[in-house]
Length: 264
Image 1 (cartoon, rainbow, N blue to C red):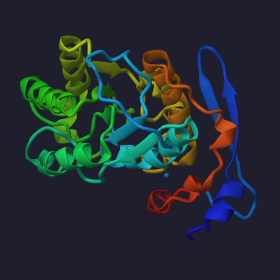
Image 2 (tube, one colour):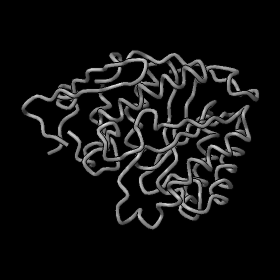
Image 3 (cartoon, one colour):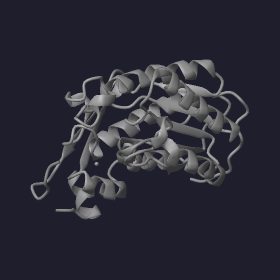
Image 4 (tube, one colour):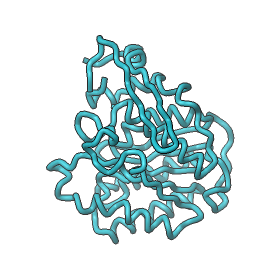
């Protein structure tokens, strides 16, 4: 049964527990719910990742990123910056033939939205050899930097390797290292962010916060990611995140993506 936005917001009461080492989110649901997804001018970047606080963030990724986008957008906007997402279910990557739609859309999005920071979460489709992965990430770096933006590459959360992903398991494991190597070649405009600090490395562990399908996050996991990501932006780019109380139970909790994932 699909819940209304009002019901979701009421049912999803998030208790945020932050320490210097970890962040936890605990959901409180009422008995009626089920269980089980700014403004301001921008200035072109001048060549270093620490030149200015990001004012316009473009988010990229696959369906995992799509499930994180509602919470991330709410948090970024509450912090006073603008946010746009081109995360795409069934794609969103930058490597191989499956990446063709991304390469078609990205230049248009860069031209229209004019981000000063692009965050690319490594997708579950970043398949290929390490050489092919590096080539794809290098192309992403050039495309983003040529548009006047910095690039932040984020490792994907751990997820269930089912029959669909099993043939590509080796490539899924090498992608973060390939991305890290590319980022190291462009220290002024590219950063690599290891999200295992939040999710851990075991997709079946409670810390990974995967939803019922073992792959995507529901509202709680997405909110946890948004809180953590905001802190990382603060450390790396001087972005001041808004307190979770300002956005964590907002209308984003009723986003369509969560209904399709069976989230409460």
